Image 1 (cartoon, rainbow, N blue to C red):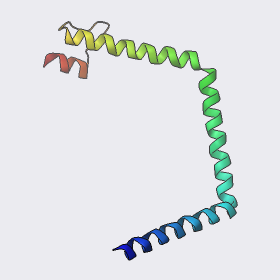
Image 2 (cartoon, rainbow, N blue to C red; image 1 turned 30 degrees about the vertical axis):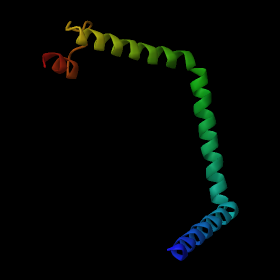
Image 3 (tube, helix red, strand yellow; image 1 turned 90 degrees about the vertical axis):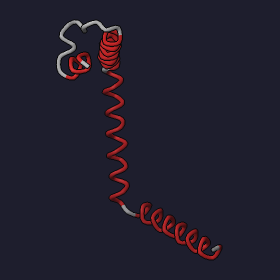
Length: 93
């Protein structure tokens, strides 16, 4: 059993070493990494620029969900058209 475990360990480390060596020498991999990092930087920059609008949208959505849940649990019909579709179906149960 121990020999089998040793063999599997050596095989795994060899594959990782080969993967790492191929990764270091392949230019395509480096270009893809740069592209991914650039996309992440752009997404973070856009999120920072629109931070207030995103927070308002999330807070508004969470407040609506909380209000709907509270009204549903209290047995009241939700206001402002909430209760159509699935919400109305839940209330009718």
